[in-house]
Length: 160
Image (cartoon, helix red, strand yellow):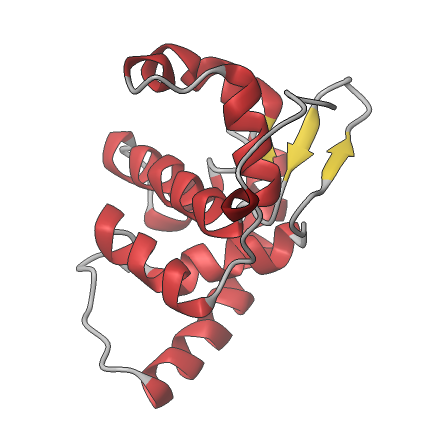
């Protein structure tokens, strides 16, 4: 995985809780679920983890390059090339979480299944993988929800 050789120094930015929460608010997704996804995916700034199918999971929230390829026409409307997107997904933790929030919002708004199935579409629509992903993110989301409710003013997203 490589991109263009030169980017602004600011393009390397670690994710912060504040920028993750801002992305959740901006995209109208539950912050605890977004944080659970990031914790489970367990990427870090700079990571490009190769999968057995030849794709890569990029950055903090493990955005897959196949998912990225599906997003390219939309990104191009904003002047973002594939190489730029790869770079920022890998090295800008806040951008990575914002794109994860965008993807989560798309899954939640276009889905007719229960909340957790829709949220786990972030990982897979294949039932067995979806259920396994739910088993990972539900307890993490609950723990994040408890943390956030102790430290922040929390409002309900209206779906359980």
